[in-house]
Every structure is written in structure tokens, then in C-alpha cells.
Length: 375
Image (cartoon, rainbow, N blue to C red; front, side, top):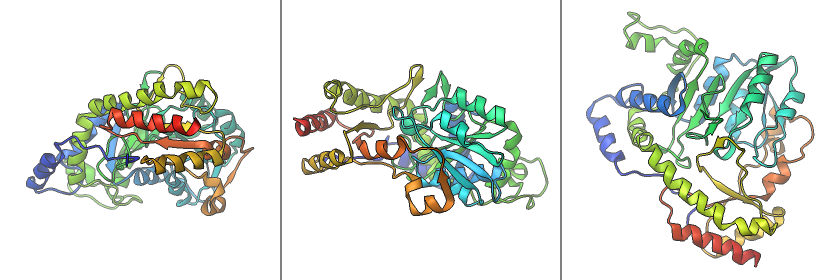
């Protein structure tokens, strides 16, 4: 069986974790956390990075940082993971889902504009599959209406928009280091802060609402409760593991990209014949080979193809069920405009096995089985 995913392992992680144990400081914001923060700042060009237990936690911090309150409206795509909406619904926000672009599966800028009201607080964009949203248009739109922009870059570390690293463009951004991501530590995430006005409060929120960070840095003689917050810290064992992954980020990137390009080239003939659609990468943008998907004619054909692959030893996967079609999605939000692409495109999409050190012969075998199905 060719698995859909295998968590990336470089081989030096255990050594770093042993060092973390020997430093006798396993709580967050110590040596290995600081190392990861610097590596992330180098990779993303963000103003500051804060390691968190998950991308979900980082999104919750975003909601606190922009003071989301009951009745505020947050615009986002329906085609995303539940955490994107949960973080803001927890603060009482009403979610306004909008349609996506069929080519990239990213949020449609024209639909964002139609969804803005005088209650809108922020736009949350999701860089699906590590492919950038149209950030120039989105940032300009947000500036016109005085809105916050949050990049859900969970899948997008080492991707860029017109040379700018994703995660460095919005006022805030979030990353995921879940074991399904390119760079992982089992569970983990990061909050990237690009608006300097939010930085001090971000550290307070991360430290349970206290100014403990300033105390640790010797700026004050004691710390106290200053604001709402929670324990949004990644432990040092996880940070030690992650530091190896980030140190070798280019190695992981290159390896995954070879597999992505093998899929892309190998499936070109099927696309030319109109049997499938492959990912679309806008000009001037780079992606990080987070995932390779194809689209079939419809949902029925997708299910048949997935069954065929499973029967022949290949684990493939669909992806998000649009949030506005879910029980909680209907309770906490509403779809604005027409659902032209979100549901239909999500039902056609199938993700193929792609992970660090996947063998070339396995990618070739998957390609062969896809051709076999359509033949």
C-alpha cells in the first residue's frame, strides 16, 4: 500500500530532543523555541513569530488580537478546515462564507467585496495547497474598508506571492506543523505578526494574558495579569523536533517538489485529453509542493477512481466538505452570494500520495493506475 502521507523525518530530531531534555527546561519560549522563531523569521520575512501548540491556537490568538466581539463579521472561504471558522465563532463572530475561484480553490476577491458590510471586522484568506491568493487585490480592498487581513498559511510555508513569502503580507498569519504538513512536529503551529502595533499584545495573549515575556527579558521586575489570553505555547520537546525540520526546510522542499513535478508531467496527457484537471499555479507565484490534486468530471467519477486506487494499493483522499454545508457551519455563518464553485469543485477533487522521500517508482505507479482507470 502506498500511503497518502508519511510525516517527514530528517533523522536528527531525537538528538535535538535529548538536548532539550538535558537543558532542564521543557516549557515553551526557551532555547529551541527561540531557534525556531529565528528560522521562521528567515523563511517568511515576518516581523515576529510565536510558536503555538497548533495552527488552531494561532488562529484563536488572531481573534483575540483584533478584538473580535459578538456580532462582528468575518469573511472567509467556505472551502477550508473548521479551525479557520471556529477561532472566530468562539469569540461570537458571524462567519460570512464566500465562493472560491475554480482554478486555484482560493477565495474569490470579487465575492469578498460583495460580502463586506459595516459589521465586517476581518478577511481571512486561505492559501490552498500552498498556492497564493491574490494578495495585492485583497490588501487594497482591506485598506479601503479598514479591515484586518489574516493569512491562514497552514499549508503555505515556503510559498510566495510575487516574490514575497506567504505569511508576510497580511497583518497576521498562521502556520501549521501538524504531521500532514511539509514541516512538522506532530502537532504545532505559529502565529506570524506583521503589524508592529500587535506585537506586545501577542506576547501577552500567548502567556495566559500576563506580561511574563517582558519579565523574562528583564524589562520588568514582576509580571501580572494584563489581558485575556491562554497557554498558547509550544513545549521545548516539540520545538527541538521542529528546529531540525526548519533547518532542513530547503531539503524537504526540493524532495517534495521533485515528486510534485513528476505527477505534473506524468498526468499532462490525461489533462490534454480532457479527462482530468491539474493544479493551476498563477504566474509569478511559487508554491511549496504541499499537495498534488486532480479533478475528475464529477463526484461519481471521483469516488470510482478512489475505489480503483484503493483496490490497487494506493491511498488517495478527498478534502474539505465546504463549511456552509455542515451543521455547525450553518449555525455560525451564512454563505454570501452564489455557490458557483465551492461545492461542485470540492466534489471533483482528489489528493494523491505526496510526502517527503516518496519513491519515484511509487509516484510512477500512482500515475499508471490513474491512466489504467481512464483507459
